[in-house]
Image 1: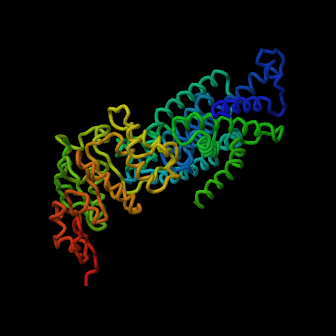
Image 2: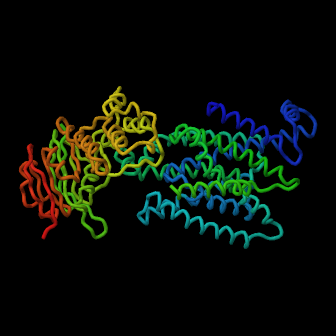
Image 3: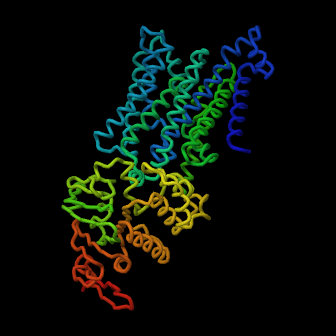
Length: 326
Length: 249
């Protein structure tokens, strides 16, 4: 089968499965009736809750796939995790503040904004640290990212201990940190769609230069790439993408790592086809994982991040083992 | 013609001085071999001449322009650089690699990719991935991706050192042959190949140029023995001299 029709078909099937799955399984007939504007409660629930949630999961997955591809391209390391640069730690800190500190603005607005600010700020911090220490190469940034992520994680834990009381439940913070796509309203879903399209465009703009960077820093420089500047730009672009994913989907582990790999098996390592392929793979993976999270243990919902970590962890270990063996 | 002139280059790393007030003038066309012991500064010199590394002081002149003032695209199209080790991070095909080489620089010549494919006999390898190529095939692919834009200046850092003798001869011959019409500067490990295939031999030692002469004049110079810290026996052959090294007593 051709790769692209295959991927699109797989995504359509994943969305269909996701829309059917839940505490209360729907049939494709129910879905059709709901989309056609059925007046019954079940149809309204499907249109207002489940379908937007499923589409949001697909878009968050696409963003994670794009973010992972950008970060792996920048670090030229197929084991690079988008979260290594501290952007996820920053986003989680921002979200924790939004959830625990009473602010004037509505939380639905404050949370994504603060997650954005946190992700962006921590990435800028990481770049700043590696620049001051004179190690603006991939390894230097990676190490700075690990250190910043550890500090931000400790800060977040402290905030959770210090600020939570009877009125603010830790449960809410935890469920976000553990990963979970919130159910958006249709206008918010439109916004998420627009953000995803912009991020895809951004990723495609970087694609050609990521290929050149993959030749190695000396060769890339000889081929006319300003390596230091491009790495800084690409890292910022990557953290925008990851921040968007984190703002709408919480901390979802391993999708950003696994999607580019699966996509590379399908379309090869050139970044131009890799970006959309990785976005599609991420969308498929998160849609299915979210369906599992919602339906496996009714009436409870398993945090999405736990589903992807349990599935993705072994994937990471297998990659690591294969890499160490060769 | 694009000449390459280095003036008073200094490069330091930590306490080590890698290039020590080095000046060198290379006029086009010409085939120049850079020789010298390990750690002499040959690779550093090549990286500075290619604009990959900026010197602490001193400057490089390319034709009538300073290297540092050239745009990235112009520099990339003017100076071809063949690194000592090349191993792409992603397993690209030969076709992709040559296309990436052709896309650098401002203007694209039509048919450049096809003629590079013909010249380096890459047609049967065109769809193969890098990891599946042999050492000799990799050398041809690398030459094609660097030379596809036909840069007026070529800087090559021992690209043939790890190849078997037949492929090494092929590569060295290609590089020195380019010196007939363009400027070709090659770090050569094998002294016999350096003296046999290049018009001019430049000896680098401890970050300085210690000798710079036509090959036939330099081969008899006792300075060679001193720089490489061996005793050379010079054996007469049908078409020149052969160096045989022995440890110094």
